[in-house]
Image (cartoon, rainbow, N blue to C red; front, side, top):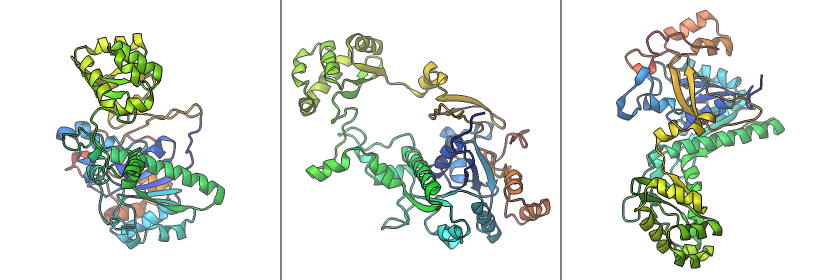
Length: 418
């Protein structure tokens, strides 16, 4: 059986909402043993109660499911000293701890990096904040829309004459979580050489700012703010989305031969004089107007056929149903249909393909505290009597039947597999 890339790495995931849980999920998908910590009964109410339309089939929260997979779920009340002691014991046996509570919270609780690194000097402690752990904005919370707004990402998105647009996908959370996982891998590599752990200070805002390509160099060289350009790329011409008679198409012609082919296809050979890249950028409005005037009188299929015949790139603007049913993505397991022992057949997007590792989604989110016994007995070696006392004191706990998304579907209370 092929070993997984992060097999043998143990992660304590004390994160909430999307940003943190997604970072830990990436490590879990790569083979790390990830222990996700929530509050007893209510769990992470900020994401367990998130669903478009307020619908929760099979007690699933789509919001939570999309950022959690292959983890063990425990429930610890960290407001209590005995709960914090469990965190210390787990951290002593982990390679990585991830948290995204308000900066300073874990330090006040005695489970911050300074305290835990004394217990486990090899611990990699990843603190995922909106604005980092220091600076003028360090105390501010951050959510996806807030991050897209305060970083300027929303301001450059949309059409110039309209209002700024927030991405409907939670790009601030997923991109920042991905970078958090990336920095964790770098820290693990460094630890293999040095033997030392370290503190990683992650800022969601800074990740989004870095993702805004040429924005910062442009303003430093010109002193001008970046504008909104709608569906036209002002720096890579041609790259746009245009309206057809019966839908939308994405069109790209970047190389000179592609550009010349596009000019001929739309019957605008007069635009061939702009084949030089600099001239294309200078005359982008005229070029884009010509493409849009041509596309609006054609069907999507006509445009795609013309692109294939001529030698430029064009694609139908796909919707999620198109992607879900795509033979290409199904064959690649990029749209992965899997059987969850609790929630049965589910779908999870997947983008990790290794030739020497069999990566897959094994299970989705879990009910609150679903893996308590498995984790506390196997990893900490807690005897039955101590577990019983912790339950009685409500230091640890499980789901609340009154909150369906914290509980398993009826009849699935013991459907875990290890």
